[in-house]
Image (spheres, rainbow, N blue to C red):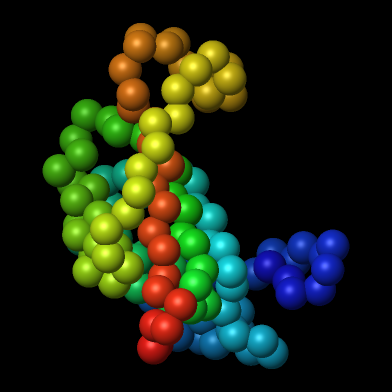
Length: 129
């Protein structure tokens, strides 16, 4: 990630790793958008809680945290993330990702079910970290 217009840089970010967070936040603070896809799938509660905390640490006041999520067979195992994110950000808005484009991108047979969702968490503009 980079704050320079038109530049993209990749950096390690192990969820909950203070050194990685410090490196990412050095020289300008957090980010306006934190985008996550395919990161929540049957990890332990401590890993999922660390993900939500990392997202919060990276998000500036007024930022949006976007999480693309696919419902699979055992959503109960993923609830720790959603509980932690709701505690840190408040309620999310969610949007079903349906249609042939989504099915094509994921080589997925569209059975008519809404199994892919975009969750949007908003960081309050006056949030204190």
